[in-house]
Amino acid sequence: MEYEIVIGLEIHAELKTKTKIFCGCKNEFGEEPNTNCCPVCLGMPGAMPVLNQKALEYAIKAGLAMNCDIAEFSKFDRKNYFYPDTPKAYQISQYDLPLCHDGYIDIELEGTTKRIGIERIHLEEDAGKLIHDASGEGSLIDHNRSGVPLIEIVTRPDIRSPEEARTVFESIKSILEYTDVSDCRMQEGSVRADVNLSVRPKGKGTFGVRTEMKNINSFRAVERACRAEAERQTELLERGLEVVRETRRWDDLKGTSFPMRSKEEAMDYRFFPEPDLLPVVIDRSLIAEIKSSIPELPFDKRRRYTEQYGLPLYDAKLLTESKKISEIFETALEVCKNPKLVSNWIMTDLLRLVNEKGKSILDTALNGRIFGRILLYFDRGEISQASARTLMEVIAETGEEPDSVIDRLSLRVQRDENLVSGVVKTIIRDNPQAVSDYRAGKTKALGFLMGRTMAALKGNGDPEQVRSLLIKELDRTE
Ligand code: ADP
Ligand code: MG
Ligand code: ZN
Image (tube, rainbow, N blue to C red; front, side, top):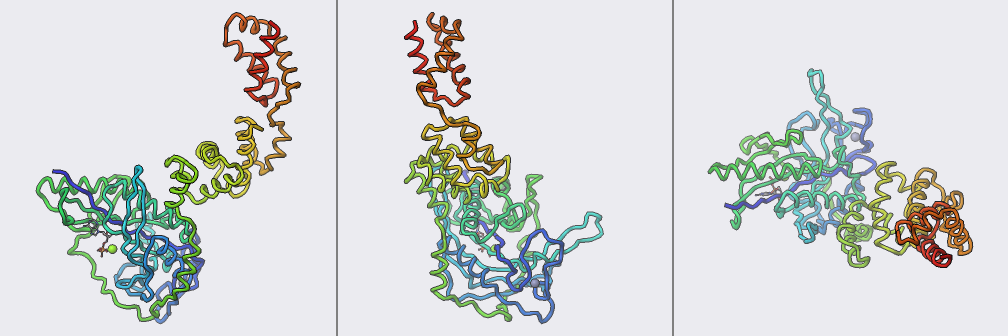
């Protein structure tokens, strides 16, 4: 029997507000533990939360970017559970009236487009971070993360393969990056996914029993976790056994998952409305204002790059994956109006330099304007390919303007016909053996003479011109 995989993702993303969601503490990663806390985020009795307006705006922005309806009226609820990372013994979240609902994103996989439903996006607070002491004497808690604003994005169970799950996760991360609502630092856990997965016999109308794997923080791990879990469930069904509805922990190092808790052990969160916060009533004009601040998103950009610039899908995908790279591409294209040329140089030389020297060179030395200038000179034949490369390397180091490096290192292509043919004559005079080889029909000798001439011109000859002047001279003096 053939089985079909059904997946839904719940993605948590930290918002990049300056302060926490319900207090004025700094929202900053990597600081000395327990230095950014106050009575509110430590859950002291009597401390009163106040909603951070910016967190609300960022959540609305993410919702609009994912085509959601924004609720004009929503509220916060207490999700009660007892665990040391949550000093209040509840998390403030949103239960039945989420801020954003009924949206979708379009994804692209192997040349086909698919729409994935977004069930809801709600606002909530992050919990503290438990640090398990290596000495084994106990666990420590860092409350700097308590009260950091989060959005939870819940997709509909529309995903049908591990690759698709990965693409959905990548696309959502990319939307959060483009809209600038999260810094999306995966390695710091600022974006993480819970994977819900079930399998069913192909063609069956109802879904199978699902499991949930929590807190997976890389694209690759999501894909691997889905693959392993789909195999595990399929095998159970094939052996006539049942899938148990449970939460599992994915261990990426071991490449397997382990049961954490079953449905019977599932917590009853006893949700109830948060009495210390007012309901959220949103003005239509605020929504319109936020909507107008949303930039062109990666999916639309990709489509435009293929349609307007005629770029292959592969290029368009690579160029739009990161907002920064797409900005470099677009700025460079304003200067050097040859899309495929700019794209090729980004995908090879520029990305190589970024790998070697770090992303920051794109903000300073090799920004879009300078990169575009270098390519413009190359495209016009004013500098050679090798010189364009040299220019980039030098500028990445020194931050100079292209023209001054071109002058300083004499990188301009030499096309002065008198000068070049003078050099050609000298080369022919000094290399009688190669000349007679050429005349004896050994075409390789022409390559040798070209090499000599180019070297004499310090690599700045125009190969076409050098070649034709050489042939002309060789034929003339025969
Ligand atoms: P809960 O309230 O238990 O979190 P939800 O109904 O909100 O459950 O669903 C959570 C996630 O699980 C969603 O992303 C949804 O798409 C996904 N999901 C629901 N049912 C299934 C299923 N049978 N197989 C796979 N994913 C599912
Ligand atoms: Mg859930
Ligand atoms: Zn605080």
